[in-house]
Image (cartoon, rainbow, N blue to C red; front, side, top):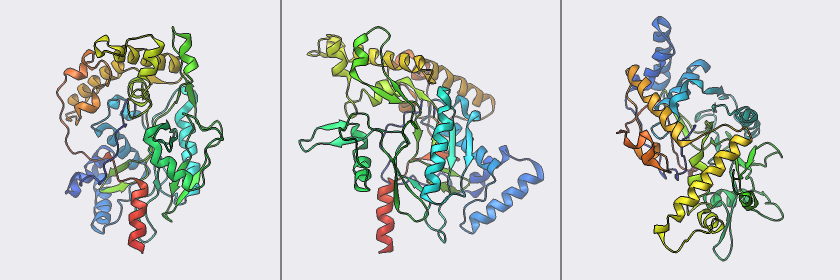
Length: 386
């Protein structure tokens, strides 16, 4: 969601169950219902879980589950706006074609001509008689290809090399002249469990050309990034049920792009390039060339998104909003699960309030979880069938 730096590699193993208690799993329903209606819905969901079936949540209940999952997520700094999440109930879709069409709708709605909307779309959970749950193979709906050359050098985003290789194996052809910012197609599997390739229509993904408010040379670097970070490979866990395909988004925090995606040494590693343009001394770390280059890169990100009218939050504002969120939760009688090393921004952390705020992470439900990659899961399913 907004300011959620989901830049780490998902865990190779699924997370342990967050609760062994059915009552804990269904407690969130008390925020959606009261009185006899709550009792009726609890009884229906208890019976389904006892029969090892997905909880038959209504669309309204699913909306509450999605919003509370955002509110609970320990690694997200942008939870101040959890009540504004738009939840799309698409559990009835089971083919890759249907899901791909739904994903296009999600992205178009989320982009909102730059005034980014927070959106969660939920697809079907596992249904053993009907087949496996749908999966989206991409980490994000928008991402750039990573090409590993024979000499070991990498063009594009090193993070997406595996996905790029899978896409090419399925028939995707990169541009005749591959570049650093080639949008990857989607790989989606439906109830059949088979991966299907969906090249993106031209113009679907809104991108922002990066330029600097002072340095004209910056635009000549040819950098850009996409407008909306739609996380698409995490699982929504709610009411004792996992939804492996549940893409969601908020809007970017500037440092996710400028201090991580474009700056990390194992990503685009642009700080040496920018330092050279700034004529900074890179021979000695005491010159603080990395810090100065990082500052100008992030200034360019903030300037470019604002100039193009694309919603984005700076890390100081996001930090202040997180503190307000914590205060509201305390007033509501709820503890906040938060992981300090994910909440604290990756740039100038000591200048933010969250740096000086004690935090504790604890299991919550509903919540979003990392899960094994879709290709690893597909391989396991194929092995079981054989």
